[in-house]
Amino acid sequence: MTISNISLIAVELENNQVRVFWQDGFRSTFHNIWLRHSPGYPDSKRPTDEKGRFPSSSVFITPSQATITVAGNLRLKWNNGRISEHCTSWLRENVYDQDTLLQKRRTASLWNSESVLKHTEFDLKLLCNNDNAVLDMFEHLLDHGVVMLRQVPTKLNTIIEIANWFGHTPTNLYSDDAEQPCIGNIKIDPSVSVATNMCHFLGPHTDTCWRQTLSGLVLLHCLKAHPQGGRSIVVDGFAVASRLRDEDQTAFDLLSQVPISFGSKVDNKDDWRVLGRIISTAADGHLEGIRYNGNSIEQLELPSKLIEPVYQALEKFESILYDRALWWQPMLQPGDLLILDNHRVLHGREAFDPDVAERHLQICAVDRDDFHNNYRRMAKKRGKPDWNLRLSAGVV
Image 1 (cartoon, one colour):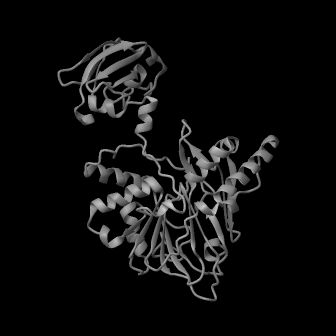
Image 2 (cartoon, helix red, strand yellow; image 1 turned 180 degrees about the vertical axis):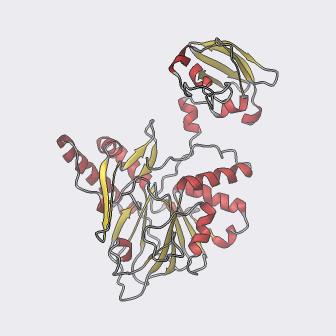
Image 3 (cartoon, helix red, strand yellow; image 1 turned 120 degrees about the horizontal axis):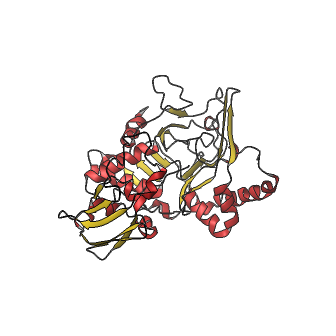
């Protein structure tokens, strides 16, 4: 039995709420005020007067009668004379009690250096003209925050063709090609004082954490691999945050509640600054996103009583982040394309000697909400029952 054909068998009014009883034994309660602002209530979406959508006077509007229509929908007669009708399938899809909300959220799969390899790799040739395979890849990225594409042509700018599968590609701040403003080149370039264009060790981080809105998905395409160094570092930030909460609840609370300063200054031109929380959570404490780059955290400007506790929380967070058991370290080869959810997965690289050989990657980003939209459209079109599950909000 699917949601679309589950019927109502009884309804009753109780304490400013409407209680409904479903054919499959499920019960749910909807607040009057919630129903007044739902699609079934007349003019609920577009006010026709100057009072706005949520006028305080509406608190006195309550249903006086609740019935089930011949079509099986919930029909309410209100004390202001209005009649509302609420589609049964819509009501079931929008049940909001705590247990149901948890079931409606897509669950993240935490991983470490050993478990990450399961189903993470996808062959590009098997994805072409195969929507089911592409949808599988999308779902793995949603659940794990990382995908490795193999057998990608090593032609310059191929990365943008792959990125377009996922969504819109914004301009790259450090693009060096006016004709390809969305693509950046990661290779040794002494003229640009950006860490990605150098050869030293880069610790795990999320990109552009010094901006109000982080890059969404990050794509890294290997064109030339260094034979000895430059091995990638990939870490599940949700696994780090979950372990922090288990080991030190106080540190977790501080990093999820106290905004700290992130900044980036490049060539005496750019001066990016933002206040942000390292761990983003939903109201129920569910993990939503990670913002972190140790090199971009500026001197703390906090009340005196928070200075030592927050620094200690940062030390604890980083001690877990640098646990090598959590690091997946693939040595990218030409034709490998790594895709990361930049609101969850941190990445970095080991040092390498540029005098030995050249290392060249191309990078671009994809709007995260655009990717989510494309996933929902594809999943709904192909009849996936979980297309409407709530997805991670990311860094907020």
